[in-house]
Image 1 (cartoon, one colour):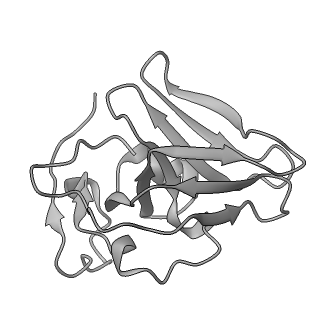
Image 2 (cartoon, rainbow, N blue to C red; image 1 turned 180 degrees about the horizontal axis):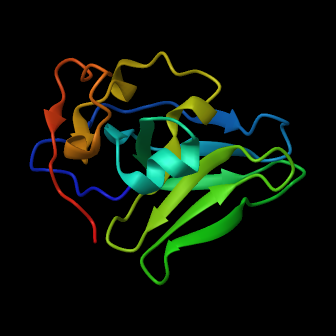
Image 3 (tube, helix red, strand yellow; image 1 turned 180 degrees about the vertical axis):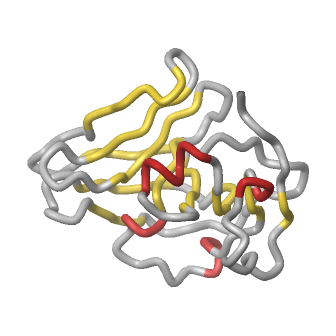
Length: 148
C-alpha cells in the first residue's frame, strides 16, 4: 500500500467502527474513523504478497488488535519505510504500515463487511504494473509511479 493520496482523494464521511479478521480468526481488529483513500494496488510487492494481480487497500487512523493472536506478524517490505502484517497461523495478509502515510492500511477483504460505499476504490496504484488481461477498476484514477 505504498501510495500517497492525491488532493481531494480522501473520503470524509463518518464511518461506524468496522471489524475484521484473518481467515482463521486469531488476528481480529476494530478499525475506527473514516475510510481514507480506498484504492487498488498492482505493485510487484502487493502482487507477490497477495498471490493475486491486485490488492484492495483502505486506511484507518486507529486499529485495535483484539483477537487471541494479538497484533499481526510484521514483514518489512522496505526496511524502515514499509511493513506488511499477516497472521502467522493462516497466512492472511491483513495490514500495512508505511512511514509516509499516517493511516494504517487494511486489506479491505479482511473486513467483515466490504459493502460500504466509502470502500469503493478511487485510485489504482502502480497501474503500469497491471497484468494486461485484467480490466481496470471503473472510475479509478490510475497511478503510474514505480518503486525502485
